[in-house]
Image 1 (cartoon, helix red, strand yellow):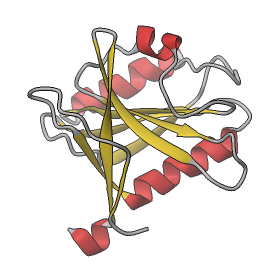
Image 2 (image 1 turned 60 degrees about the horizontal axis):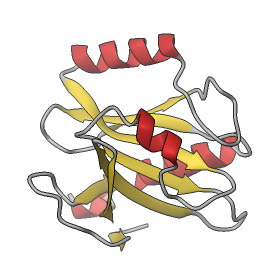
Image 3 (image 1 turned 90 degrees about the horizontal axis):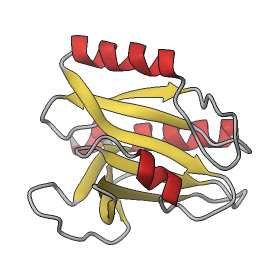
Image 4 (image 1 turned 120 degrees about the vertical axis):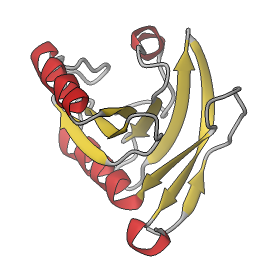
Amino acid sequence: MTAATLGPGKSHGNVNDVLTIDSAIVDAIVAHARRDHPDEACGVVAGPIGSDLPARLIPMDNAARSMTFYEFDSMEQLRVWREMDDNDEEPVVIYHSHTATEAYPSRTDISFAGEPGAHYLLVSTREPDSEEIRSFRIVDGVVTEEEINIVDATVDA
């Protein structure tokens, strides 16, 4: 995959309205979603604090082992957040999959969105031969879709 843009972008103030992410990370997220299907997959992409640059993929376990929602294991989440803190990183992207519905945040997703600076990336694996990938900002219960700019770091860097 080389540079591509997915989804409509809408301005939402001082936050970037485009998620720029490496194709290798997107491919790994999709592979994780396919591997965990029919359960939802989840994880984080960490990046340097303040950079808005997703750099390090951290696939996590869906403690709920559910087809309809995800939940980070509390001990794993604590370990991952401490590791990011030690590395001067933050969660730039929080991702999960929807296995039977479109890639749009559910009411539960919205209510649990606790990182206002993060991009919430959703992958729908409801179609066996294709994926729907969309990104959102979720701040105070307000969902704003944003563009995804997928780049090939080896070519576009």
